[in-house]
Length: 638
Image (cartoon, rainbow, N blue to C red; front, side, top):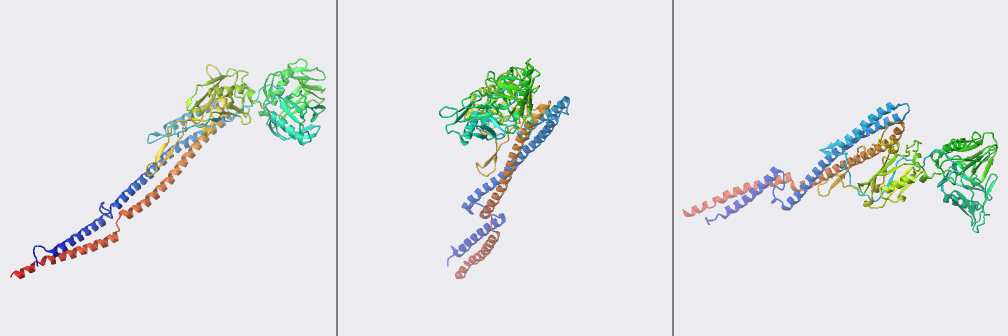
């Protein structure tokens, strides 16, 4: 037995300390609720847990960010809702002003309200803010890089009409119903539709061949002259009959006749229906080739003078009557009448005697009951239409006169071009306007075209950012010192429909919402400029009946633009709401995973604590017993 070292006591003490430490650790876990209270508890688990906590906190903040984003979007959309209400009121006023029960003073009062409404649209655009950020002034617009250029005008009929008229020279022809030609091969039919001179010649050729004509047959049609040949140059393959007149191959005396391009002795289309589009078709008179002579039973052939220009059917009849009235021999002996319902122009003598109508060098048709031609063969020569005769699809004249000044503005690669002006003369044509637009935009003349059927100006440029054309605007004034604007023209040309490839080039100012826990997990939200200029409302003027009518379509376009922007903002809001739902789910699942790593299992840890506590008490008892062992040595020393 030894007394210097009480090994049993040391062993009991060691175990007691272990048990006490284990019990203390268990008590710490039970009191904190955490399995990992320090890195020593689980070094790897602590690292994983802290990374998860970072993700969870990031997801929770991203959800909050998305909520803030929704609030911003709702602010912008709410402001645009009021802009829509303003536009609806403006449209109501324009429709009210269009009604001729309103006086000029009434319209001026309505325009005063429109002016205030436009100012309010600007105020909303420039003052709507969220956390000091202005939302609708273009500061938050998306960046764009133009890759091409193509612009189209809106609601503009270029192939308009003038005053007066005679024989016509056309670039294109149209039939409102199938046309029948009486030929030596029998009746042949040309399908209704639109034709160029070349297309019409081809259609006649194919129809004649199908009816039994020679395979070498060829019909050509150029400069309003029809020529028929076969491969050998002998004109026996086809003849086209009209009444008592027969026109055979190689007969070049076939200039177009009045009202719609019916060629005397060329086309028998008495079975064709009237053309419902007569008011939109232009008839062109060319000096030198179109001279009308009229004779009756009482009057020898007289020349009826009609000025060069582009005319409708009604204006053609009016011009012919003016020419007859100015002729001393014909005055009171002949009359031209245009029937809009049937689209036919009739010429008759007042004494019902035979009347002869002749185009210089052409065949002659005589009719005792008067000369009548159908207007089914019609056309529009858009390049030679006079600017002073332009009108919209509702026949409202644009108001361009000699001395009017058209100003052309636009951007190339985001920079404004030097404005180009065109001073209108009595002879200025659509082709002159196209050339001026091309010049202003540094384009070839061929890059600017007129589509009479659609009533549009099309501008096509080169690909690439450096050549990007945008914000093209045409405005006109009366050319006086006051520069009084031509409201109808300006309304029609106040905005151009840009294609996707022809947007402005500018820096991206979109908002970036952090909607994820990590770098790059963002969402862009852009809000376009929504002021009067951006909505092309600057030229809206309802102080006149004509201006009010055209303003309605301009306001409709603006309303559509605002509605489109609101729809985009609504889509952003919906996306953010889905984002919030997803962030919540991710945060919940990560929290669950982190809890399993970091949180203590209270039941298991309580069992562990109870075990260690009991062991600690047992160790204390054994330590007491071990401490009594040295007392036994005293018995040996007695």
